[in-house]
Image (cartoon, rainbow, N blue to C red):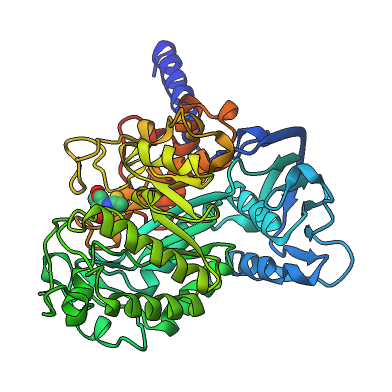
Length: 510
Ligand code: TNX
């Protein structure tokens, strides 16, 4: 090799080394450089390092934090609980800090300790979620974390997602996996759409035909299925351990073909209808003149209220095109009384605002700004799920392999770039309870399908619900989102590789 070629050889190696170093798994040395989603309210980096050793210890200052500690132990296998003395991770409830509210936390990393404090266990739990996002998966035994302080609290009290288990049924394990998805991003509600034309999915002991007949199929004619009350309770408990409230929805008076096929008395002609496996909407209705209908609704809500510790029952109420308007209003008014009688607060899709609902009831806007305005005039709080922005069953673009496009095509940037406070000029911001991103499942048959539509839009919806508008920005968000790809991959999540996100730059971290 002559001198010149040697020179180029060395230069070549240097360039290669530089390129490789650029792709190497590098952990941020500054606390503000972590790809945290949702973005925390305040991050102050102090420039030091904390070494997390293989035998990590955790100490909880309060017994009521056992749920949080159990969760952390579950996620970090070699974690040991110590009763007293110094611990690597200390969890406490002594924040005594009004700004943090019920769900906020402070995460302080010094050179010798990680301290998560909050006013309530739920805040500590969210501090734990932030910490877990900073620790590379499967490598926590020897990780170094940058020092500093994160102070964080949510913008909205209600941050949810909905899973439609009626159009296609998803079993308990799938629902738990879905709960894990939303847990990571600090959502606090899972709304389960438990009944529709294509299937009734929750055991009601006094109405056995609902599941004997009404759960037997699903869109496309598959086997369907349902949750026993025992299984439902298991889901509720799994969610509660992650500070997530399950909101059950029984969709009435429309979207009821499965119930109409199960009980003849619910039909105006007294004859049981046929099971339905198509995807049309708006053709079915409970007979609003029959007393049998109200006896049925009472029985269903009573059992549902008993197995649901959360304060909300969702009664659907959308797209009742087969119900006359005056019958619809009469029906919703009566159902409102039944829900109240069992000590629960009613939530309904935006159409219910036309009825005489109580001030505490909550209206979920999916379609009509007019209905949301009506609700606001009555003082009802509003959950925002505008179909054109928040429906995760919408395709990303025309090439998406599944999904609908009736409301919009929703690319990842559009899913992220909207402000709930400015959706309706007529709705005062104090009445906005929060946001929910629904996943309807007419085109969604299995977990891979769920993952493809939910990821990567879900983290964006979680950030809309949690982070102040002033700190949200698509250009910086898309970089943080790319930082989550290694997590999606190591958890086997089949996410949509949106061309708007530079996934490649993070490939090698995994
Ligand atoms: C409208 S949103 C519906 C659902 C469908 C969905 C499909 C709403 C309250 N009703 O029944 O599944 O569109 O995108």
